[in-house]
Image 1 (cartoon, rainbow, N blue to C red):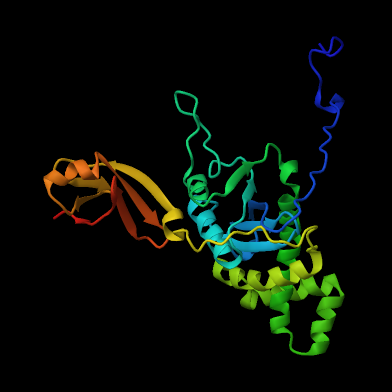
Image 2 (cartoon, rainbow, N blue to C red):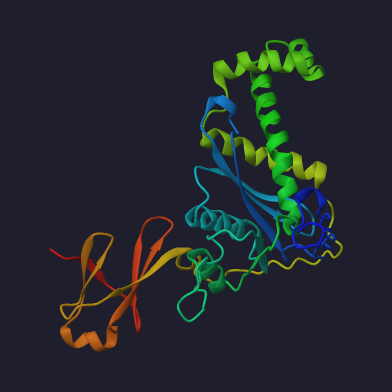
Length: 298
């Protein structure tokens, strides 16, 4: 089979050549997003995930957030923070995770929107899913850099906090052997162990990282859009449809709710209502003609 070219073993395969993709010209044209599971706190804490948002044009780190899991909720919270600080980007570049792309099409071959991609569509943000890891190389390389540098920075940060004299601090910085020796003791006393502590540190690390690694865009005009006319709370919500009964009730999350109105209002409400659960945990319910008032059914 090898001689006839039917089967090629791994050693004989020619390496794939991935041509580098040209960065976008302006800030906000494309933001690469990714989640990186790693033992960020080494043995002092559990494995967690670091969500990274990086601008394609400048390689600037925009958002670093430690979370327990890579989930739609956490990506929505990060994107909402991004938009509130920088504005709305034109597009996001991600992997093919089920958060960004429905894995199974419907019976007629249509892929429905995921909760995250639905939120992006309401804000006119295009979600582009990379075919290969190499396609989103900037954020992949940033994650590898962060896994190396951020862990070291976390160590160094704690060591600086516990250095008794400038001379001790200098010795720690000069030699890796001294760093590793004092790191174990310092981490044992008061290391970064939690996600909250790591996120507080990450906000300062972003400034240092960008000062060293970021580059200016080829075009200075900014493509971030204003969101003054957008309902961000409504956009960043989990949306589900629920059937309305003749008694104007619907079930959601194990509870029964009643819509304020009369039976005659059922035609105006429609057979289904849209239930939005916002990031802050509040609920909003919408019928055919807009938002509805509801309460727990007694």
